[in-house]
Image (cartoon, rainbow, N blue to C red; front, side, top):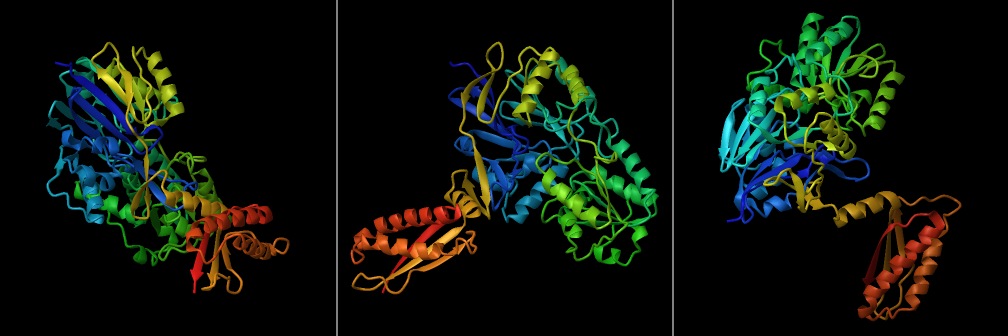
Amino acid sequence: MKKEEFIFCPLGGSGEIGMNMNLFAYGNPENKKWIIVDIGVTFADDTIPGIDLIYPDPGFIVDKKKDLLGLVLTHAHEDHIGAIAHIWPKLLCNIYATPFTSVLIQEKFKEKKIDIGNKLKIVELNGNIKLGPFKIEFVTLTHSILEPNGLSIETPAGTVLHTGDWKCDPNPLIGETINEKKLKQIGDNKVLAMICDSTNVFSPGRAGSEADVRKSLLKIMENIQKRIVVTSFASNVARMESIFYCAEKVRRRICLVGRSMHRIYKAARQCGYLKNLVEPIDPREAKKISREKIIYLCTGSQGEPNGAMMRISNYIHPDVMVESGDVVIFSSKIIPGNEKKLYKLHNQLVKNGIEVISEENEFVHVSGHPNREDLKDMYNWVKPQSVIPVHGEHRHMIEHINFAKEMQVPYPVRVENGDIVQLYPGEKPKVIDKAPSGRIYVDGNVSVGEESQSIKDRKNLSLNGFLEITIIINDIGSIVKKPIISFKGIPNNEENSNFVFDLEDKIHSICKTFSLHNSNQEHNLIEALKTNCRKTVKEKTGKRPYTNINLVRI
């Protein structure tokens, strides 16, 4: 018999921050059983027009779905659960999650009108599940969302600790502190490998505590006389509770603004959190309260175009208005890549006489990921034989490898999406193969591949504009009247306004070289017109437009 293997393979989240999806397999080479850990999305930037969400290509594991034992979720951030409604219908496996994560997953399926029957299995905090050869223990950690879990994945070959997202918060305000005792017990039983968060590996010291942020926010709010608007990640329930706490202390009413803020608030209440708080008031009622007696807690902390904060700053929000002298507190991190739109939002507010407080000028945020001292604690508790950095760009993961060497870890392994890592057998884990991996774009409500023609066409349209030419041909093969030329997005001024006449001349000269009454030549004629018309427009305007040719016979 061939020897059993223990395999790890990331399909997303290695070499990037976001889009986390990881596979584990155990068995002999012809008969492996698989599990998936997390199934997240990332958000598109301006380089892919019309696309909001991107998720990992699941094709590799979809092909093995008959051997798939389940999908296990560490926590409810979008980069860990956001692709579930897109991918799960291709898998139809059981889903395992703790209560808070389960509530948000159910909402995702409900929104997409997907019936999952009894496939969602709720796991209690610090609970256990058995999936074939995998004995999985949920380990309560601390992070910037409720119920974050590490996973101790035990097989006959040994144990792996998959940390998920975490930090060391001695006072997380909501939920339990990190289960240090359980982590030490796992470490005492020899850990083959630790799959570990790399996000803050460049940051010295500790990530900090939510309790310290609360104290700082209260101190800031005590000195504000006018309207207060706070914007934060809706998923950070501890931060939400801190705003409620501060509102009560400074004798203000609180109002939640934005759909995701209400959704998270309701989910937390449903799971028994956020008890004994004053009820938030409706935004329409809040308009009747004087500005020195209200705090708004809003979505849109990253300058999202449709977020509540952007609409408030542009004075198009139906219920919330800010005016000179008010204060907006950005109680969140400026995520790399969002600087441009966030600073635009800050400038818009400041220009209108509104004071902006952010992590740049006050202590209003702590990260949910481990700094170097936090990582040292985890390494000392778990004592892994190998570390596989994930949840980071390549620069983070390479620095994490260097950090693991400093911590005397014998066999750190560098991976990227698609790498198949053999954890067992062998003296040390190593990359042995490559699985197909990639990105799927959510285009409207259709999922398309990276090479999709719709994406290419839209990029071309956004960069070069659109040209359409209609040529009417009569039954004796002659052009009737002038070609009809229309265009969008092509620069046009007095200097180049005659490019349309040049196009007409070009069209006539090309058409003369073809027999227009021979319909067999239509394809060649259309291609010749496209090529030459694009070339003419390029010479006149510098743009090569997306071009469409219509031949109409009458």
